[in-house]
Length: 207
Figure 1 (tube, rainbow, N blue to C red):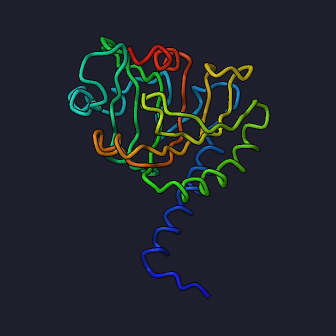
Figure 2: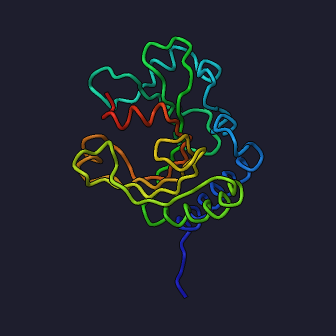
Figure 3: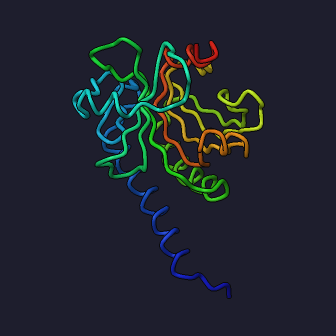
C-alpha cells in the first residue's frame, strides 16, 4: 500500500474543497443563457470593479504583462478571496468606471493534478451547461509567441461554438521554462468568463 504523508493529505483536501466550492458556487449562481450571470468571487462581467476595490487599489494592482500601454489591461485581486489565490480582471484603458470586461480565477497547481481536477469540474459543468455547445482543446498559449506554453481547455459557448463567442472555460496552463523564468508565471487551474470583446483583443496580438 502506498503511504500518503501529511502534506499530501493536505494537498488533496485543498483540491477536493476547491472542486466542491466551485461546483456549489456555480450551481447556485449560473444561468446558462447569459455570461453576465456567472460570478467569480462575487464579481460578474459588466460590474464596476469599484464595487469591489478602491481606485487606488485598482491602479496599484495592475499586472505587469506588457511594458507599454495597450487597449486593455489586467488587474489582480489577491485579498479577501474564498475560492482562488488570484482573480484576474480585464479592464479597458481609459474607462474611469472600471467596467469588468472579462475575469478569471486562478490557482497554482502542477499540470497532472490540474488535469485531474479539470475532469472533476467538467463532469458537473456538463450538467449545469447541458444546453450549451462545448469542446475540448489542447492549444498553444497566445501569450507565448515561442509556442512552447500550452493550455488544456474545456470550453462552454454562449453562441454557436465559434472560438470568439462569449464562453466559460476550465483551463490548465502549462507555461514554458522561459516564461516561468522571465514572467514568474506558474502552472495552474483557471476558471474563466471570457468575452468576445477581449478575445478580439487577444487575437489582435494584445495591441
